[in-house]
Length: 187
Ligand SMILES: [Zn+2]
Image (cartoon, rainbow, N blue to C red):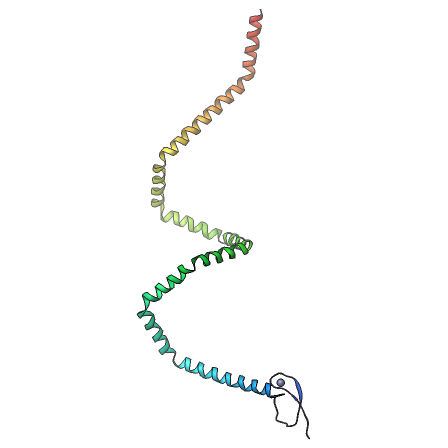
């Protein structure tokens, strides 16, 4: 009986065959190979069908979306609202787990875009000068009472400080005065 040293085309194992054209070490590998071959063929057929109907499929999907627009949007919203808690928890967990990385990224980004941000701010201020001024004025008017109360308090405080400083500066003279008054009384 002839013996051929072979290597299985499926599992790669060495085996000895009685026939020269044997490709697989056993039925298990042969069946698997057949299945794989059919599977490849089946998939490529499906793919070809899918490609051939591309235009038709897209048109159908478009028409469906148009016809069911409201319903699709409502479903999407409901899904989004439905797992709100879950989403927030997930986002929080992610932030907590990647805190360092996120901070580093934010700071890198901040550094990298410094000039850009500055230019943007300047341009924005230039373009919206009147509006910004009006807002500032409105804010000032809105807080006028508070601002003038604060200003009065600050003025009182600095007047008190000044007075205190004068007193401290005058201390030696006052001391001298008290001493000399005492002397006068003693006499
Ligand atoms: Zn095999």
